[in-house]
Image (cartoon, rainbow, N blue to C red):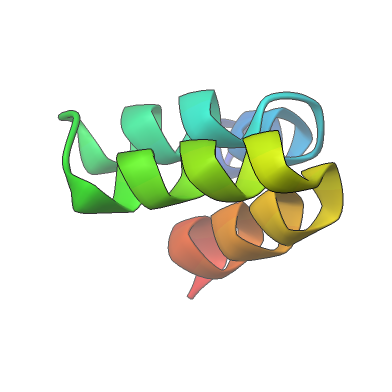
Length: 55
C-alpha cells in the first residue's frame, strides 16, 4: 500500500468528499454524492468514500 492510499484512507474518515475529489481528480457526480451523503449523515459518506477510493 502506497503512502498516497494511506493518506486518502485517513481523509476518507475525516473529510469524505475531499478524499473522493482528490482520488477522482475532478469534481464530478461521485464527489457530489459523497458530499450529500456526508451532509445527511457522516457514516454513509465515509462508507461511500472508502468504496470509491479502495474499490
